[in-house]
Length: 115
Image (cartoon, rainbow, N blue to C red; front, side, top):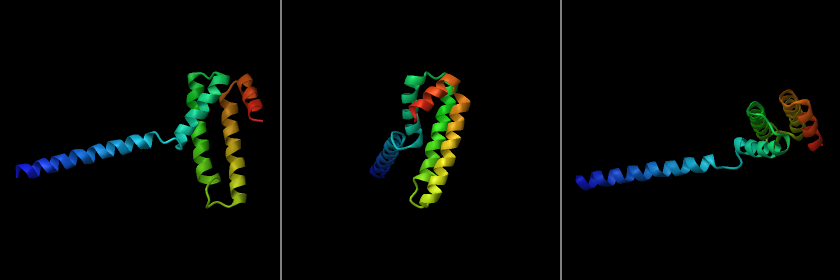
């Protein structure tokens, strides 16, 4: 009976450790919208020097853009015409968020960088 409990305890510990390792690998996935947004925001911050409030707001805008692109633009189930229409719609929403968040000088510099 004592050996049986030892085996059960050992199996439980191994199973618990496996779940922890799986959770860590998910958080490091570079294709997640949050990871992509963080990278894009860091690159942009080098040239535009955001405030803390601007970073938070723009991080949300970048994540929303990436989620919308994955769901409605880069999805194989969406027709090409719908994908183009969705891309235009989400690009306009992202541009509006940038215009609303950035100062005039930052926005003009960002617009010049994206042309």
